Amino acid sequence: MGKKIKFIVWLLLMALSGLGTVHAQDDDFAAGKAKSKLCQQCHGEDGNSINPFCPNLAGQNPAYLEKQIRDFQARVRVDPIMTGVSQSVISDQDVKDIAAYFGSRKRMAGYNANKIGQLIFREGKPESGLDSCASCHGENGRGKQDDAVAFPVLGGQTRDYVIKQLRDMRSGARHNDPAGMMGDIAKKLSDAEISALADYISEL
Image (cartoon, rainbow, N blue to C red):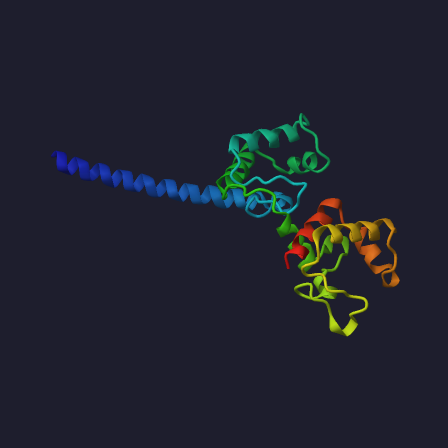
């Protein structure tokens, strides 16, 4: 066989093996994405968390992620939620697929408080029975003319003022809101969520 033919055969073999690799990678990606559904509830679909208490996993070293999952399983590392969640990861292959999926996502962008504030303002916290701020204060925090006494304009308000009012309502130091509605709402917000909301509101 001539050198030229050998070279062509080699190229074809490389191309075929490459196609197999891409297919395998696609399968691994799909498997990891499917197996990480439970993880995504806290860490985000793409591994970028919207919860300030849950770390970003996107772009993390897969080997590191594998170790952490196994440490949670073995209770070498203990966490009220992750210790239990890790038990749902049954096999070594599950661990590898989940770690590979999050590791392949776009590298973590860091904590984005504004994103969290936006979610609470626009969507609320359904799991806590908290309606969105926009449902009373308007889509862009511009208030509602039909009940301006109860629902003030918030968009563009200073960050520190918003934080103080929400904390005062939560503690009861301020209690002049109609039927104690804002007090009840503020009690469902953590300090981190209040800060995130204040960041978002101040930029509207």
